[in-house]
Length: 87
Image 1 (cartoon, rainbow, N blue to C red):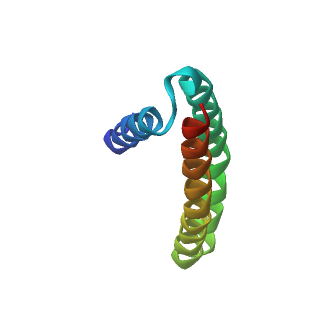
Image 2 (cartoon, rainbow, N blue to C red):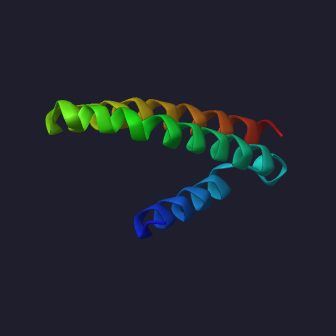
Image 3 (cartoon, helix red, strand yellow):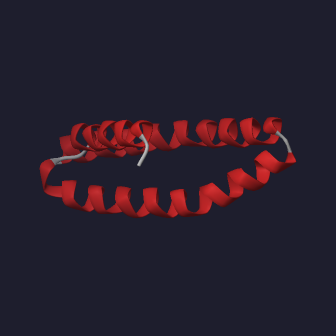
């Protein structure tokens, strides 16, 4: 197991705790673990193939995924804030 993976895992789990209300934290952790595992399982061979094509393909793929994740983060954060104030 790599050191960097452990650091990311704990940072992301801490962010989930900060972003979700206590009543929904179990569901949030379940969704996170399922998504993280599937992404890890699919991402490794995809990134390996892209690396074989060229490092620029790999960098472009990672940059694209990071750009896609930004609006998703804002959407999740907004929905959590709305739900918190609704209750």
